[in-house]
Length: 101
Image (cartoon, rainbow, N blue to C red; front, side):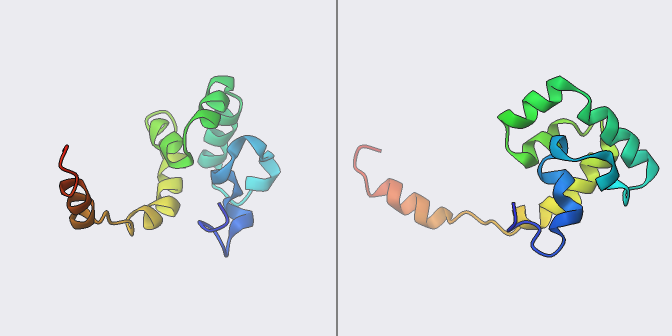
């Protein structure tokens, strides 16, 4: 996760693993976000789900229940996802070179 947050890793640690953070460590978040965070981190079902899916997927899944936190995390994570472009020509060329496909 350090490659996602190289300059502000300390203040973004709650995104990487919200279940390992104490409330004092997120005092920079507004009150509503802190309330959502407290509710989120007290849910054992969400703790389990967090361990089963990628970070970005987790935050997307909980968007309806925790809209503020989810939006804040997406603002941090999306810039990295948007710069990934598949090389379709390369993928198609390799697939077409196999006679069985």
